[in-house]
Amino acid sequence: MGKVHDLVIVGSGIAGHSAAIYAARADLNPLVLTGPEPGGQLTLTTDVENFLGFPEGVGGAELAQRGREQAEQFGAEYRRGRVVEADLETRPFALELASNETVRTRALVVATGASARWVGAENEDELMGYGLSTCATCDGAFHREHDVLVVGGGDSAMEEATFLTKFADTVYVAHRRDELSASEIMRQRAFDNDDVEFLWNTELLELQGSREEGITGAELVTHPEGYPREKLEADESVERRVLDVQGVFYAIGHTPNTAFLEETTVPLDEDGYIETREGMTTETAVEGVFAAGDVMDRKYQQAITAAGTGSMAALDAEEWLEEHRTDFEPPATEKSLSDDATV
Image 1 (tube, helix red, strand yellow):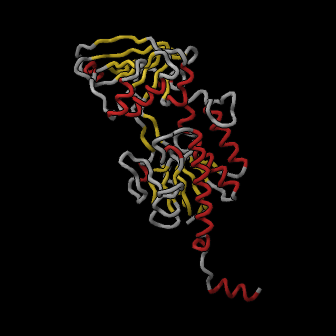
Image 2 (cartoon, one colour; image 1 turned 90 degrees about the vertical axis):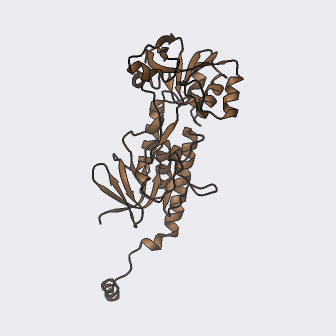
Image 3 (cartoon, one colour; image 1 turned 180 degrees about the vertical axis):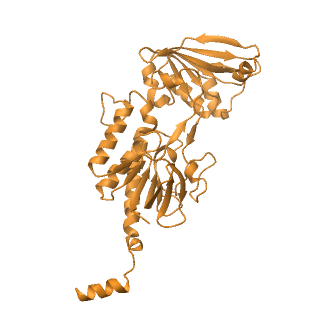
């Protein structure tokens, strides 16, 4: 069968690092599978100002790297690998990697995070973290007295837009239709805010600026019947304009990274987030499987809450492993008993 780990942590964002630190200090010798994007979503944030212990702020990538170094200092092992399939029906669990390798473990912490959906606008790869953000709570304070653009029409977009009015002069909301999908209460809050201006039947086409100067503008496209980018691709006449903004926020939802769990008995909600048991726990309905960070938290999605649930998952896993330790010990064979008798 090969080596069987006591604990494997899937994901290397803040939740994964936090779980690794606690598990390593408990002598569980955790293996951390980093996934395709080591460090997680936080590496897309240039400055983190709301993480405990960093009064001057810290770079997102630096915070993630420090977490890894701290976990490795206590004995955690990191390996580049992406889980594509999980067999959680047998014991120990078997995790199939994209490299065709199989990793076996007695307990599992899933900390794979949730990836923010991107628009597909020109220059978004270059400017993500340099004026372009997927988290108003994280980056809104950098845009005091700026004009900013929020892209989206659901509850999260309305929440982001309303929050950003604490800092920005004007918050524009671009939505590809002329009707919001947000709930009535969230919609009304945005409508009632004089600092929020709606741009209907409008989509983002291009971000202007550079990493040195940040975002300097956003090119938008509009069509009276909505979905203007589709109309543009179909060579229909559309209206273009450049909006003078210094920040852009994507608020079109997140996709939890749980595809490898879809064929397992780990319960997922309708959007793919892992459901944990009721109460303050990271336990799932599958014994020995725990979840931490944004992959199970569709509400807060902050680095500090990811760190908290990561530590909780490690503590829960440690307790579970201790309770089931005798289940993992191989039964004594006749040969081993006779060997003991002759010593």
